[in-house]
Length: 178
Ligand SMILES: [Fe+2]
Ligand SMILES: [Fe+2]
Image (cartoon, rainbow, N blue to C red; front, top):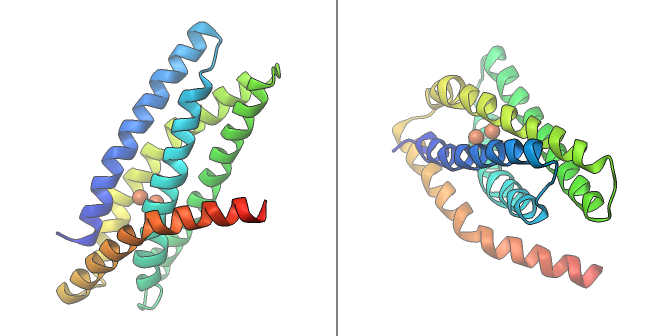
C-alpha cells in the first residue's frame, strides 16, 4: 500500500464524523438546542484523530519529505494551501469548543456560533479531502521511489505508535503547569 492509501483510509473515518456533524446540525436546527456532550466528542475527534494523528502525518512526514524534493511550483503552492487549510480548521474547532462552553453558561449567541462552526466543518472537510484524495496525493507519490514509499509507511507506523504516549505526556504536562 502507498502511504497515501493509509491517509485515504483515515479520510473515510473523518467523513463518517462529518456525516454525524451534519445529522447533529439538522437536529439543532429543528430543536434549537445543542448537545454539549456530542460537541465534546466531536472536538476531541477533530483535535486528536484528525489534527494530531492525521494532519500530523501529512504535515510532519509526507509534506516534510516532499519539502526536500524539487517540487514543481504549482505542487508546492498546493501543499502550502493544504497547510493553510489545516491551520484554518484548527481555529474553527477551537471556536466550536468556545461556543459550546458559552452555550453551557447560558449565552444567547452561542447557539448561532455552534451552528456556524459546525456548518463550516461539514463543508470544509469534504472539499479538503477531495483535494487530497483526487489531486494532491496521486501527484505527490510520483516524487517517491518504491523504497521511499515503504520507508514513509514505516515512519507513519512509528508516528502512530508514539502518538498516545505523546498525547498523555502533553496532558500531564499541562496539568503540572496549570
Ligand atoms: Fe489534510
Ligand atoms: Fe487528509
